Length: 129
Image (cartoon, rainbow, N blue to C red):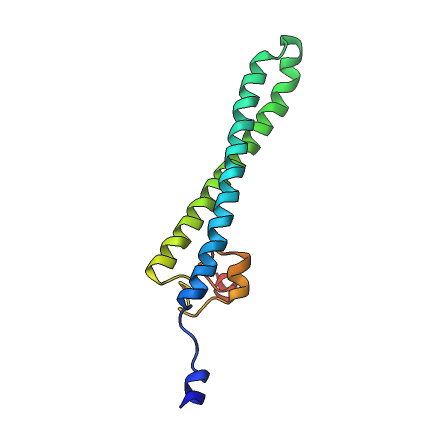
């Protein structure tokens, strides 16, 4: 009987495994929130320093300042989305659906979840899209 049971495909992660993923996600979220705060500081500093620029240099710097502001805004938006995705992963851990592919219903390999802990799809499902 044990032989048949061991051959069945695992359909969810154990509470211990989920706790391991939860810790990983929490540490990544802490890091992401620090990065977001740094980006916000940089953006607010660049706004203040742009006001202090001498008129002669202002015209030359406007192009590069605008570009870096846009880049920082994009980075901040990506970081916010990443944080939301991590928060959603924590919800899936809480409701017992974490690590289950939303397309195939199969268990996402641990290796993939360790690299991309907020993923909702197996590699195969993602590549098929």
